[in-house]
Length: 85
Image (cartoon, rainbow, N blue to C red):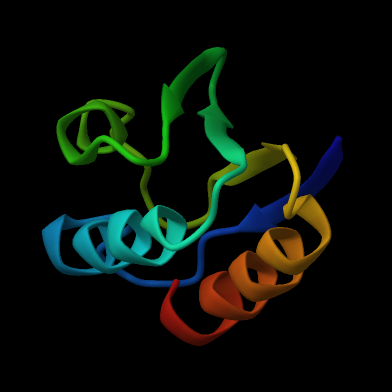
């Protein structure tokens, strides 16, 4: 299992547009991806669950990636977070 933390930089937080892009990005991998913040977690392949986390600017999120392609997924997702959030 791979895991990384990221502090959200986007002034609006994890809103609909980047959340939709994240779901699309995660959908390209076979690994299970979970995003956790403030004691709650969500499957990153489900947009509504991600949005329900209410992630705002300055909050730290933890991404856990587990599966066959976890190395590639973790690398791609870290890059995605840095570029979009």
